[in-house]
Image (cartoon, one colour):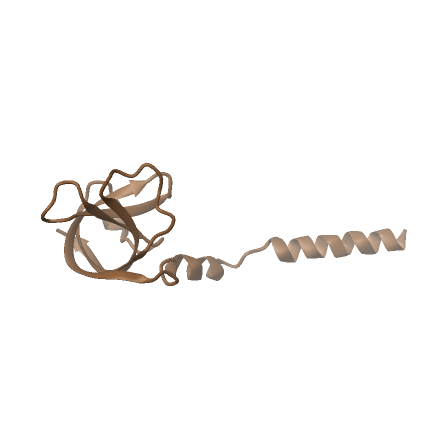
Length: 126
């Protein structure tokens, strides 16, 4: 009986300590979502439109290439990087930062669209 009680207490202690997750751990992961990806290009004061990708559950900014009608870079904001005042699909913004490799690319993208992590330096309304 004592042996069974010991195992139950040990099991409960393991479950209690391993199931908990510190809030600070989540914040570190969210803030550094692009840090492990190689830089592709740097952008400065590029105009774009905010959107929300339901599949990724993240805000994105679509930045059309100025000389084309069907090519765009799509920057995926790391969680918490986009200010709440700009978190509305269709909001016109100006962004600066570094575009980093996003892999694998989301399925069913329009031809000419490429997704990147956006390591944000600044963002503001147009």
